[in-house]
Length: 150
Image 1: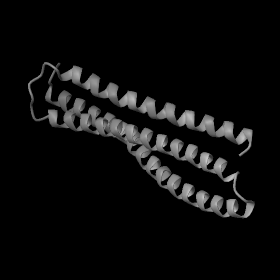
Image 2: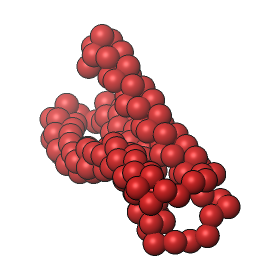
Image 3: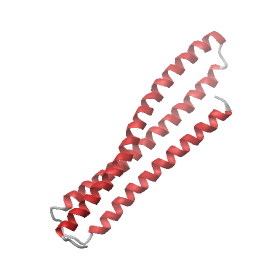
Image 4: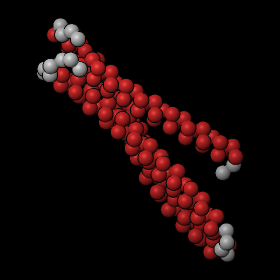
């Protein structure tokens, strides 16, 4: 990997991390704000919609944690792979070549699984945040139609 590719990879990873943490903060803020809006109210049936919004935001937050955990696993596997390549330098060229191709195959397999998981958790996180917000707005519309005030 060239220096330019390495820098682009670092920038891409940093952008993904920032997005993940931003979405986690937004979900946490949504939960906190919605709790403050209902802290003095008695539990009534329309609050089930509110609880659904909070639960969806909590799932979004959890998805961000899972995404971060998988990203950290990829970084660990990458460091281990690089370490194994450095160890192979002390072996004969023919033997090192065979072991390097085996290590590359196993690395790609492991990282591929984590990439797939990261994609899934990333989508859950993003769509969970959006769905939680829509559910919260629906709850407010229901409250307005019932003429409930805070």
